[in-house]
Image (tube, rainbow, N blue to C red):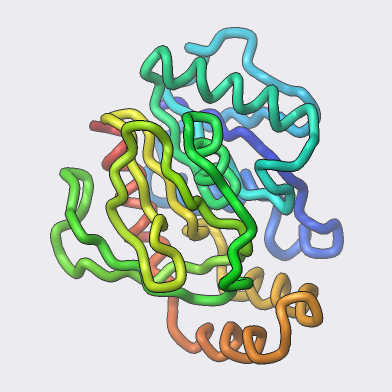
Length: 233
């Protein structure tokens, strides 16, 4: 399988030696679970796209510090690309910003949530378990970092999992689009760095709660297997 990663942001330079860029995080997770995957990366923030949409079998859209409603030309171009992928039935996995961008591109709406920041480890719970799920526990722990949330879902989307804080945490459109609000690619050390960097912005109570949540481990490999199951189906 060939997976195209659409890079929508850059990691802060001082963090790259320890954690890599965002595509590196996905290669580390998914490549560990399936060493036969071939990865291609396009920096869509810089205007990079494949010459042929069928150059890869599926696409993954990374997270970003940008908001999908920002007036940035590259975001509009990416939305058009997502609409074309959807029209042609190409498989898409959206993560955080990618989750929100897919919703906004396909008829939904994203807003800054009045609930504030979600950081650290959150538990999201499935209300229905699709074929790619492992059919074990409905709840799963995933690292998050977001203030924006999907408030109206993409046309035809099914909400599969959520929480009191984030109702639309895992969504699927047909058999070809799967999106997660959380970050399966993050490791706790990177989550801690982001919280420390945004400590004043997110507020002391949320910061303290987020750091304390890192005492538990995220279920990154479990979520990675779901993503691979979905892509292979």
